[in-house]
Figure (cartoon, one colour):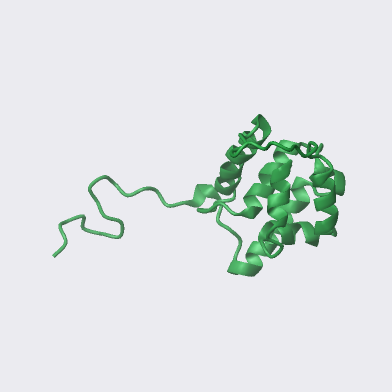
Length: 143
């Protein structure tokens, strides 16, 4: 899947670091991913539509972020989604990158960056009651 190649474009991103931490060289993964691409064509559409597998990966990216309790989508979530879509059969799996070790490495990297493990999605505070501002104890009008 060509989305793997996009992850390799940012070697300092969490996804690339998680791959390298598992002993996989980014150039080796680039070669494995490139080998799965169809042959080059002379006439390329200006906008190439996503196939079903790419659409599923994009949907799973958001779910991975929510599952990990993150309020953003990063390369790490894209990587986890691609591993889910590959399901053991794709360039990532071929080169030795699997979901469990990748997720553990991502958590380690994020702890090193932010200083604490990410909070699970279930620990998010409940939304404020309608008509009440967040942080207002009395709920009355401000001065």
